[in-house]
Image (cartoon, rainbow, N blue to C red; front, side, top):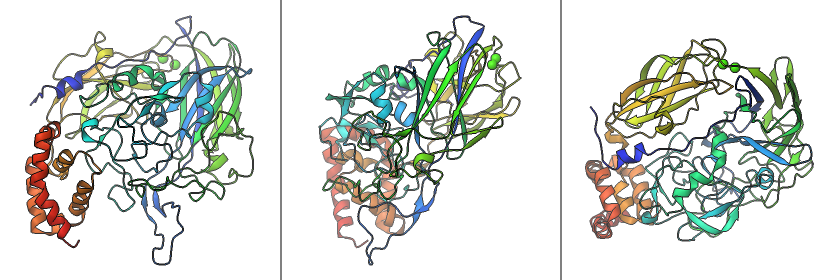
Length: 561
Ligand SMILES: [Ca+2]
Ligand SMILES: [Ca+2]
């Protein structure tokens, strides 16, 4: 059954801007650059968290379950003269979610889903060679070294998590531990070489007016893609625009990896900022700087292949300039997954390389077949998954390049006429071979809401299939999904307000084990989400809620736990 919530449904229906890939001048001809590489990184598993203080005998370092850390990667093309031409690929943490230009000092600690701190050290070479600049995004209250920000200057967060300490649930990065509100920032006076986040298509009422501008100014989201998993071969396919005629070019690939420490670039050498609130949350992240690979290649009427297995140098460890430092002994160069070997060796078609550029010209006017036999394979309160038989590059032959996924609230037609203005869902799953089962997941949906979902395949020359649609209804929210500190967060104004933090730790450690806890769970689970939305918007209700919570806070303070 469809449940419409006015306001929320409007938010879900707002249109998004689309990037249209360029085509060659002859519509039957497309020139394509395929870039192949395999990302290294740090595998998930039990690790001793990095620390800037050596472990003592009464506080020995212990390995704890920790998430996979994958690199950030950007690829761009220059002329041999050094003239910048195009960015063709950027991992979405930087290209879409704006970690290079978000509120907070650059040296804030980090962890899985960490929301704050502008990471100017991620791609210093790319950032200074690409010519676009942006206003720097600051915290709304200009408190650059504070991780806690006012609720009335924050809005719900669908991508990042709240800052965590290593003792907190969720440290292993499997999911955010609770509903999160973040300060989305405001344009400051300084200039940034990095784009702001562009995933906020409908700013919240509590966001600054700047937020509405982020998406329109970030041209790099059009070439952003999900971060490749450790050890998975990745192919980036980029349609060569008409202005890139036959001739010689250079592809650069810059690769950054958090916590890639060695003796020179250690947590002791690059510690967290001292003396800030919540400074013990997260861990130091500034290990070895970005490394750069350089591949000269040629665009011609016939296919050309060029490859490289050595890095050409590394970026500024402080992120301040765009020069490439030549290789030296400070960068680890003998250990796969780290330093100069952050890209692993890849074998393909009898060649071996770290980066390979394949420039080819193709005549292709045959679109993929439409996705067929589409069914709903999973539906939760927050998302759905669809399964269908994958088409190919030409009909059912070859392999598609990807899928465009759109959705609208309700049982409404999605056709070629309104496809581009429907809500966009990012496709970032593995691409299945023609005829095999393809899964498409759509996240961040509303509970108990009917959606029409539309999927279209496209090939490497941007030929698109016809559209396949289906309807699906998300499930009701489970009681366990309600965050027990929702009301408290709304009442106190900040996720990290001390009393909220104490209540949260109390909940995690005690709630299931005491009568008081059972009562508190019952109350929050009964009134939590619906009350919190109202409470958060009203100063009077906020203070009233604080009054109601105060005895509980006092009880918790008085407990030994
Ligand atoms: Ca085709
Ligand atoms: Ca093709």
